[in-house]
Image 1 (cartoon, rainbow, N blue to C red):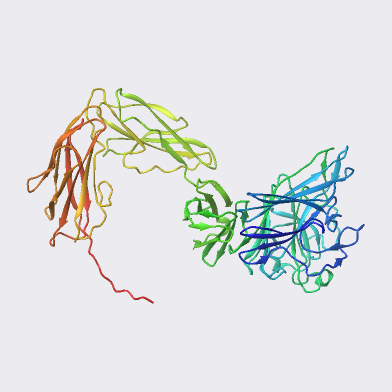
Image 2: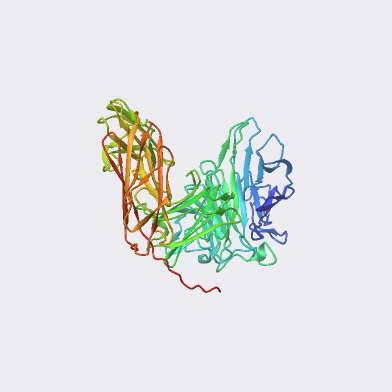
Length: 633
């Protein structure tokens, strides 16, 4: 028995080395079917003539169906570490036939069981063989399938292995190949992904092979399911089976209490009719991940990192996320977009998500079906953890490289770079602004270059920003930083530059102050910064609105002489060396007659810059305080 915070896994080495139980601790359910009796059936290979429907996950080799070794004792060994526990089961050490070992790893901090099969050919000749995993599943507490159980498969076509349902091709026959095929999930108006729509038994393969790297089942009644994540380029077979629903196989054939299961099979060959080959001395191996999911409503996509459930419910779109690892705030982001236009429908950053803490969000569908929606669950670095109808709708990140405060030649080099986590950057769009109050204009409209020379004029300060286009054709957006992403001033002769001076008030940004309470003073700060290469002799004048009263005791400066007040205008003068700055502060107090909800503007005039005086203004609006009654219940 292996156990971590999420799973308790039981292995029976002496009964085919099988995984016998997988208990999802948040709900207490054993997601694997567990037959309460050990009862021989008349199924299995003709030369054996019987099979035990014990339950769990069994290893099927060297032939199709359940193989020969489901009831043989397998040896086992165990390795423990701080990362987790690995139990290796092995069928034999014989050197004259196909043999297999299977590593079963339960990590300390993950909600999955990692299964790594190792079919081996120890002989001196090549061997044709078959190797399959068969999982008997009953998600939820019932130990039997429910009417709300759904199969999550990905191929557009399935090949019938065997069925008693004559709505499907090949019923009541023994096909010799994958010639009896039907569309998935809907065939002739019947949705076969829903078990409740079945009549008799059905076994089916994804055709021509596994179409994606996951399959699974989900019970909407129990709101629990099981995902199998695997590399479809190696484990190419994906098969489903159930005894039926409205007219199923009689459960007395395998049990005594009416319990039962559906099955998920995975193999190295696409179907039971296909064989794989191992050269002399060769081993093939891969790792797949089996894990329970819960409280996400459906199983629409899965990776080793997470599973998504995406469904419509009335006029809403419901998205569930199950993470196999605990992720804190800032470590995960969920996005939903319109699949055709990349219009963002929602963005969530969960505070906590993990195997026991799924995320479930609801948003208006806007008439969209699930096929018209793209969903992505990302980590904090923007890497895709799992996606549904994945499309690269995230904006590309691009930035202009740092520039010096000033350059002494009219022509200088501007550099930029960008990255896109899902595809490459194909082109850039670079804009420039001449002066802090100038308008942004295109410098380079679409270029694959990452640097270029720019020619400016003495005394002018140039601001730059860039956006990128990815190889899918999606353009990012320009950032809206006050001074662009980078800026510099052309100085062919020494001069002071005060262009990045600014004026702010309580909690505000340059030029805008949040709504203020009329009974509190408003503090203003004028920051004078010299980014040039010559000391500037600066003169600051600031005339507050007449309806605000200066609190003269709040006048102050971080350097130079103190500010002055002549009854109408605040003044400050002094020298500001290159690379230095001075902060002038003061507070204004509203009066009873001060207008409410009207913009109050005061403008500071700063002289001493290379191109003449600058104006920096701030706007404040006094709010109307309102007191409302509250009732606690």
